[in-house]
Amino acid sequence: MKKFFICLVLLLCIFVPQNCTAMTKESEIVSYVKSLPNTEEVTCVIFGKYCGLGIRTKGILLKSQSVAYVKEVEENVKKIDPSLKKIFVTTDLKETMILKEIKKQLEAGASPFEIYRYVKNKYPSELDKYFFQNYNAVK
Image (cartoon, rainbow, N blue to C red):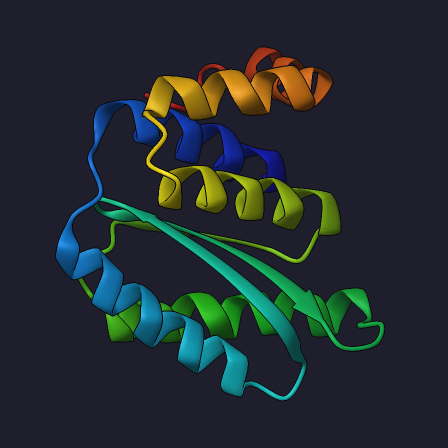
């Protein structure tokens, strides 16, 4: 599931341009997630009606705490922007770093295809493994 949102974000990057209202919602979402007690750092990427959140937490969370934390984030982000169709939240460090790099590339003005190629070259096994495992999930 965690790798699913990275692939979906990349695919959305190809098909859906980022709009200006997403930037204001993005800052609201980042402010909210940073206000949570277990959050150290947040990376938010919004494409159309999809949102990817990479979160670095403070300390170590138990599995049950992590699941509750992610659920709370998803529910409250949905309240901040009800137009979001799907919200993907990860606390995995590698996936968060990939989202950071995607965000940097977007801010630098890279095209969706350039971003995809960059991520594909840097993390080939991650994308390949996920596409083959979950190709039916993205329709």
